[in-house]
Image 1: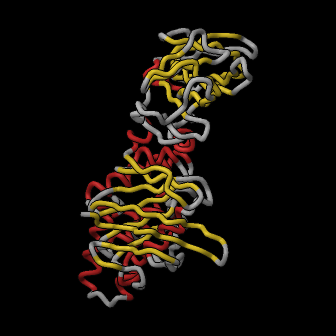
Image 2: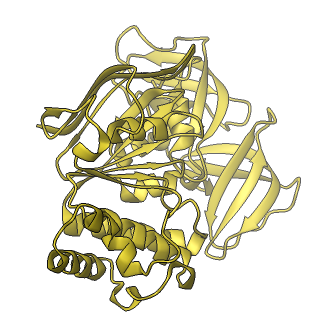
Image 3: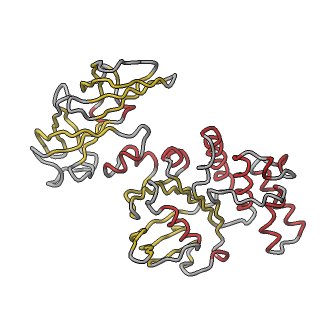
Length: 364
């Protein structure tokens, strides 16, 4: 049974529609991540779950109860925002305890809950410090601690790591994943960072323009993106997409050609496209190749490229190149394989790791 359920959720501001018929669910104890570009409606959707935004149409259910019009304080949810929103004149201890004091929880119980939150977040030595004496990551842990002591049914995170530097972001991702394992509470997390989505989520909801593009586990979205938007959004660097032509089709298998392909490529459908749907002979398609699946001079299928720029990352190299049709390509090679501008080379790949999308961007 779904612990969180959204049915046909819509949000309009006057004539502007920002959420368009979203229906999704989360199981109890599941970690669900909303991901998408800025302005896709993911934070608005989260705020409607919390009760901070009015729902224009549709229904919100939490733990089997309809909460669509219920005020935020009665939904038993805790929300962690992008800004820490800590009281600068209070200690860490008092910041965490503030909500409990306002609810007139007995002093002994407040002390017990604050101590437990501090243990879970490993910040016992910080309890008597003021926010100005903390790092960004430590401040965010205080904000999370303030949410923990409310013992919510549902945790909501609205881009909580976006104000942190790269090192702290990586550290806090580990902290949040550990917190989820220890508490076992349902969590919904909003981010525009697909790395956060891939590393934290049990399931990812990909949003664009207020609509759900695809829902699935990180592996499902990486291995079988439903369209070019998801294919380009999940994976870093993003998938290469080049224009190719269908030379032959036999059931769920296509033969495609491209000026840079050394030989025609035979690729099978990932969507069970054995019927009449999908591209046919003579149609234009998009051929998708992930940078990490391209190998310099190796592999059963070959594509000829011209190098533009090489970026050494120490253990690997990103090679930016172009096809004969002047389409950009990125290759992620192991080790330090620097190629100069204008240098031609071949990259190999396995046909099983190639993707085909029709002219409308739908996966074949």
